[in-house]
Length: 140
Image (cartoon, rainbow, N blue to C red):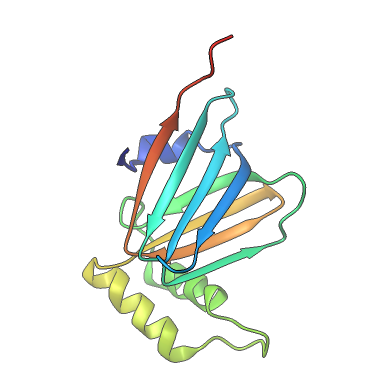
């Protein structure tokens, strides 16, 4: 597994989310993507604080994939995504959780991952870390 970089994130443009695995006890998350070129990779998140997936459909294709700190979000964008991430059934974000998330991002102890879909799932993850694993192609 390797660290996630801007180049690896850019390669997820038009990638399809093909599998998710949530480990609630260990606060882990794995998202497997099939890239436009057919190759597979898995993003593995550790120390997951909050996860939101909205609009999951039978096809889920990423338009933009953003990650702090590799992508510098302005404060308003971070705030907007954290409010969405921490908005529950009552329609209002949990202000204390939003503030704690923003502080963690600012001091480098947390990262914010966000998928803006072209179709299907919008995804936001607040976690302690993420790595990427390239999945080797199966022999023909």
